[in-house]
Length: 410
Image (cartoon, rainbow, N blue to C red; front, side):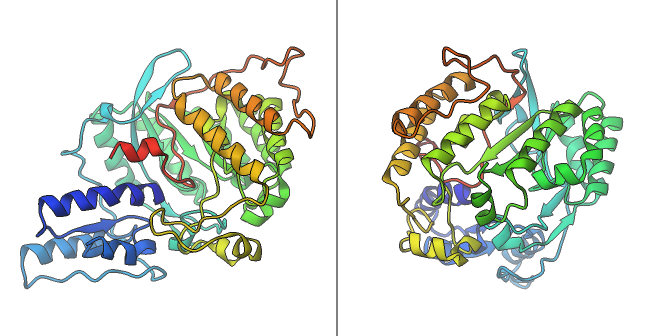
């Protein structure tokens, strides 16, 4: 997505230096959105997220001048689905990628696959929306399992389903997890599900629990109903609370993600977010980076249709591939930068420790608006004990810019 596109820039330049004659192709969700920028970088072929058929045509064209030539598909066209199980034979071993850290200190090797592509929802800030525009489709079960099977054979003990929303197709999802449990009873998994789908399909939560789901990621984004309305999330603060309890009752931890800083975020609202995380005993279930993420406005984002955003953004910045914005309250932007530095500079700190430090930064910034501590805090200001959950060794988040640390890794 956005981070991958940013990280590609220095790699493209490096490849062009090493082999100026190489035919370069960019493939992925954000490639069509940044087609002009990519072509200026020297990319000859731009393929969208449903580019398998085009990629085959491109490969044939390279092998034989008489073969079919590749034509880039502009966004908005109906994709021609060509489902193939990926050949992972030449990739690094799964153990070299992110692993699952269990609460008891053990680890599990993680594989990754998709059961669906796209999403039928239109959340304004979501990076999927400008490309798929409310469309989604299921990947045939046999194709999904051919991919899972080869990863389990390569050592995978846990599968992350990368679908934007695993319950876009609830019947398809049920077939997948029941077959996974039957064919690989020792393999666990995690999924991403919208809050509104957790509520709508609550009857499926026990099925997920009994088939090996260790946690559910959900893009909550905010606990402020006004902000949720601007983002067109389709749920409310009360819905979020209900979803937490439904998942907890089913024995599956909910791992919320947030866009903590938006043009509509107030200091008081940020304090309420911290307070709710404490009150619901979610500190161990929220990756610290989620409390630092700033709203990302990219090419094609429906956010650009909002008058509030039009008044807030500056000119498009090709260096960051974003429409930059400033918060009307300089204290909010300053707090975001402080929180991001605290998270980035202390990657090995525990979630409890980092949350406490973030809460202290907030209270220092908002000293004039009173305390926001809730039931999760003891009288001496320390956090109450909270249960750890399985976590991935690298936190995944799509709605944020790459950090300076990320860029230095390229």
